[in-house]
Length: 125
Image 1 (tube, rainbow, N blue to C red):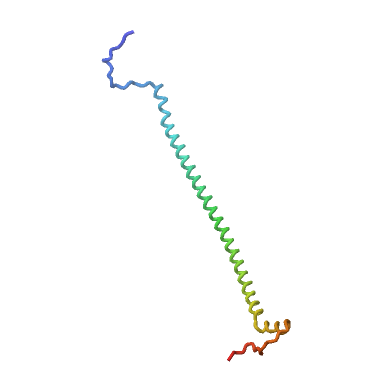
Image 2 (spheres, helix red, strand yellow):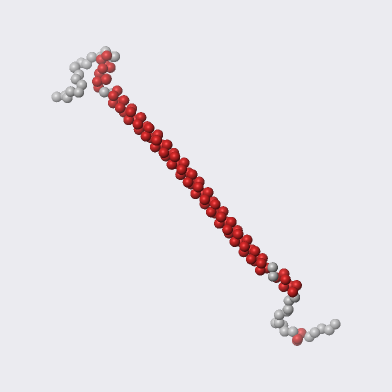
């Protein structure tokens, strides 16, 4: 075996690669492309998930607004009914508290007599 002198080879000359060494390096490019596709798909899935969550939030807020609107309408209807009942009761109060009715009950049911004659509806001098 003979040893070749180093002077024939340059220290900076590239060492030729064999085809066996270059083949494992080639899959790295498609691997980077595959990683990018996975990253893009994850971004798309994340965006879709975010949109779905926003949609669910908006639908729940809309449902809350519809429920509150129905509650407000029921309260308005109850208020209208109570106002009508209040007006009816105010009419009854005016009727039952009229001076003529009170005088009639006092004289007939309670057998009371006025000390001085009472004239209802007459102006005092």
